[in-house]
Image (cartoon, rainbow, N blue to C red):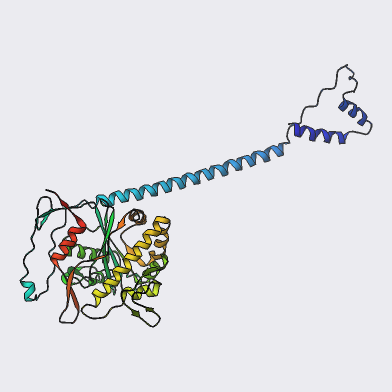
Length: 417
């Protein structure tokens, strides 16, 4: 109260008359005479704050307290939200891994051409046995056990520009141009990629525009997507067709990237750098074989989509596709390792052109998990042969032995008896 005492005493001095001023000075100097009662004048008490000032101070204090409480509540809410999201991501990851613990796939019973050549008819049966109780495989005398700590994802590239709102109507003009499997092996901390030809002959149901099944067909895999709605139903049809074709291989999820999203994805990682496997020419693009280039959106689309319409045209295109995808994945994972925000930036860049059965927590979990894994070797092509049918359309038939050996190398581990 010292500061306020001095202030109010100075105000009192100014209000004294000129006749009283000397006495006040004597009091201040300590020489004033005692009062009539013979006692010294008592020290004046410090005056109390004015009521209006006190109310103003109280109001400010209340506002400060309220603001602090609001900030605290916001911080708590953010902490709870982020904690809940992190927990959701972790739980989805755990659920994802547990979801793979299913029986081993059956030995593939591949679709065969209606008319086989004499050499194909003379093929000897495979030296393979699947043990009924465990699902283990004996192949050429070696015992193999299924690795159930692998999660498989189906990735599709669609030849249509963007997803369309069909209002629940089925049968769309969109086909799977790129079909790829990604196997995340938690046990060995590795990721394996496999491509499957869009012309692979498989079985899938036929749906009418209302979504009712009216038959079953054997046709090119690319067509399965078109019998759906361009969204979730198309994903389901394609995923089931691929799984059945590969011996009921468990596939956890399916995602489809439409054409406009390819350019956005390419540019989101700063362009994909590679050496073209062959020279690609177009009106505004020239990519020279063997000369390193960082592809922009337009160049990336031409590089992985251009093909000659011949028996081998799609297989040649698939080699470029595998090269591009491997380079893309490695650049993306390297970026995620340096900056965890990369996953969200890429997701935001392409989310309007992607159809997936994954949610954001799945995607963030997978990006963080994949960044800690090693991408194995080259992207592997599921082996087979191609021929033209009577209508001059390409038909791809999986090679049973080649596919079995690929399946064993990715999904099985040798057992020492």
